[in-house]
Amino acid sequence: MEAKAQSTLPRLVFFLHLRQDREVLFPLIEASVESGRIVEVWVRRGLHAQDPQLTDRVRRLGITPKVLSWWRLRTGLFLNWRLGDALITASESTAPPHRLSYHLTCAAKRRGVRTFTLQHGLENVGLTYFDSEYPPGSVEFASDRILIWGPLGGLHPSVGDKTREKCVSVGVPKKYSVLVSEVPQSKQTRVAIFENLHWSRYDSHYTASFERDLLAVIAHYPEIEFVLKGHPSSQWVRAFAKKLSGTTNVHCVDAEAANRDFSGAAVLLHAAAAVITTPSTVALDAAFLDRPVAVATYDLDLDFYKPLPLLRNEADWHVFLAEAHVSEFHRRAERFRETHTVGLVSPPNLIARIDQLSG
Image 1 (cartoon, rainbow, N blue to C red):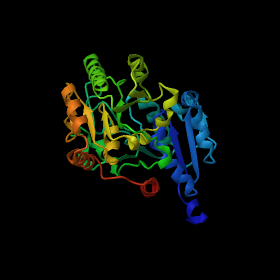
Image 2 (image 1 turned 30 degrees about the vertical axis):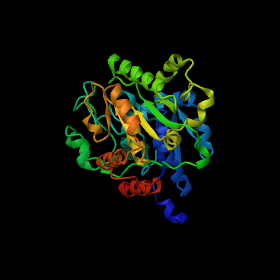
Image 3 (image 1 turned 120 degrees about the horizontal axis):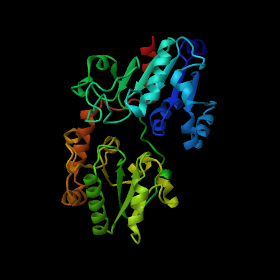
Image 4 (image 1 turned 45 degrees about the vertical axis):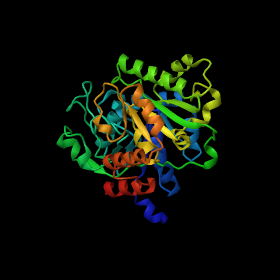
């Protein structure tokens, strides 16, 4: 695109609030830089302290990130807003984990900035998911547009008209490709286990059942290499690793320095022959990579995850591990993917869509 045409496009401001925002926003940041756009990246000061490599990654793109205090982000003051800017957040809402992004979005709108937020997970509170902690009507979004992964008909039936009218179906803006050299090889069949047990939806019975059945299959299948990876906000894997003393067929990502080869979820999914996860977006990621995937459900009502195999007891774990190679599991993953998304959208195409919506 010619420089003159580029100058008419909005400046893109990306806000990184939580560690998991990296996965959502970095493909868009990289695509924007590659196309020659004017880009700013704002980083919450606490996030910079938690992950110093984050700002290094931004600098490698030729951008000097702005590390901003909670107060400046909360008020939106002294941020040199420009009329016509576009603010893009990985997730903003009135839900406490995302409230800072919500307030920043409100401040941006007061200054004439166009605002966009993204669906950041398969079960996104306020869009595709509600529970007793976040009942219908309790979560609102400030952004002008909410860019969602699936059809509008896939929103939760309890989503209000105000939110529904903001939603635009764009697809999943993820890049699943990795270099072959990045995927560690193994002579054993490799099964990836993902968890997000920090979430309040899980009670002690669920966690105990998950641990018990996982330990049972690890012991039962010494020929399988199990690789455990936790959510960035979870400490469960580190604690669980202490129960695996003497076990040779299981590795815990981030709990063992030697297993940082699997620090990226996409790399582990590429390396795995099958995947088991607690209810999470990983189920969709595995489906996009055509990996047989099962969801540990126990007593939770998780019809949302059908037609994937739902593991309610140890016997279900054994059935899945014994039959994961069967083509039916691949067909289930495909149906699941088609139910909840309209497919993938490339980062450049999503940026182009944002430009259209900014007009």
